[in-house]
Length: 146
Image 1 (spheres, rainbow, N blue to C red):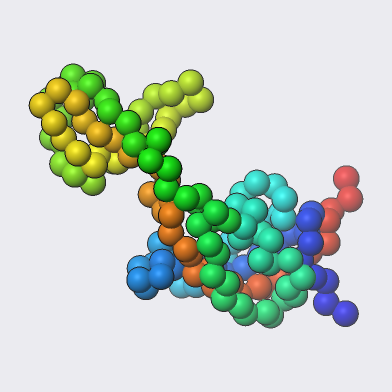
Image 2 (image 1 turned 90 degrees about the horizontal axis):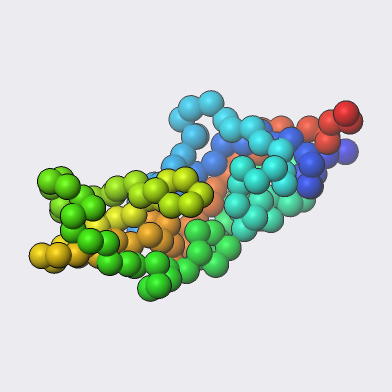
């Protein structure tokens, strides 16, 4: 009997993340498969939960809603940053910058440029998007005993 995916199992799989408009965000179907341990934090819970119970050889597609993927778009995460924080850099809509915060770097995307301030969206670029998560399970290995 094949081992099914559960917390602690090590899973090797091919996957793709596709937006509802067909844009491929990430895929490893044409490259080496990825390996991770369920519950190690490498995969968002909404994606991990959809894999539970699958076995090697399974191929599935799941539509992951925003709240189980990269979160809903939060208007409070769009913030004004003083223009002088950008020195003389070209500011175009859609340009991504890394900002220092207490926990390290936080990416933000320029959404509006004014004379003295720049509106920056600190939401994850995929926030508010439903993601079509396609998987092909290559192998499922039991939790290793240490």
